Length: 421
Length: 107
Picture (cartoon, rainbow over the protein chains, first blue to last red):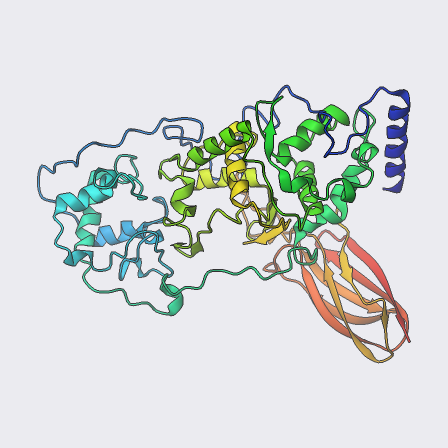
């Protein structure tokens, strides 16, 4: 390790002495930072992580495409009254293979004997008393947009998740719901369930393995010379000093790329231009350095530019993307994480956080997955979870979205790496 | 490839003091019950024993089972009567022993 550091410094000294290399530039200096402009910062074609669901959702919107079938303009007329089986409907309502089950968002009395129902949608425990006709109930499930264009509910019929016959069973089941839900405990009642509070010391490497990047991996990479003979340390000897606040200003608009640049993509392109290291987004090296660079700015107030003209435009694009419905389940970011929508409510046993504060602890350790995730991987997972195809992590849409989301946390203090379930 | 074990032992203690020790080893603790994409069982590979010796005398030991999560973490206490060295040993199913030493000054 020590000899590697020496070699790195020597190499950097030689490079500087010969004048063949970029002059030492601090991250804050006005001189343009060397960046590799050509090519992508992650694999093309992008292949989904092999341990993730491999479902192909190409028929539905992504953040970059509009391919979902259009919303119907009028309720469907039923040719004959519904003759569904309430028992089959109860089973379907609890079927987690169909986009998470109705209980993910609705309290439904005794349905499925459910523990921990969610409360993003209204409580349906007494819907059977509402005297709604079959056609209305059918259309609410088939595609609720015909009654409410702003509905959060997936268009189960239009998007082909439930067949007409299955929706008939669900309607028959709904008509049997006539008594207030009785919860087994306070925890089962989403109105009384306490939001999760993260109390672990996220900077204790005995508790948070993401800190190992800070303790060992990133400092080792810092002094490791790349194919061009230089190492990070050649220009940025005192990393702690040079990057005391930098990460709190990222992402930012990069005119040479014509897109917003996040830390992860910056690491890829800057390393390529300076040391020659190949550290694509989502490589272990890239994640380690992204953790380290943000850790160095811990305690700094997040202050992402959203005022300059190109940043403002990117912010507005990001805001539009946050409202863009994607996937077979047809969700936008704001549906789950927007105030007055899903934020602060429960999808089954999972609490939906608001946008402010969502980014101040990324990259973060996921205890349930034993892995450190950067924000782009988190975006990708959100997409796959709503049955949409994800974009490559360096997609310009994610970049705009990251700027929008980071700006929501302006004024908060960076606290990286986080630790979350 | 293996991560260095993380160990917390106080540098100093008074004679007869009970000191707290924390250790953490990065290890996948593969249970042997999971299947890979091809449907075949992923072979078991866990740390099956952990010991802590103080100046050559066993101070703490435990057996680990497949249900124990990745990155096994131990927190335990030892009464120290003299200065010396703790030796920590993790035994892997494949026979590898990972060891680390930490010394303490007792006054």
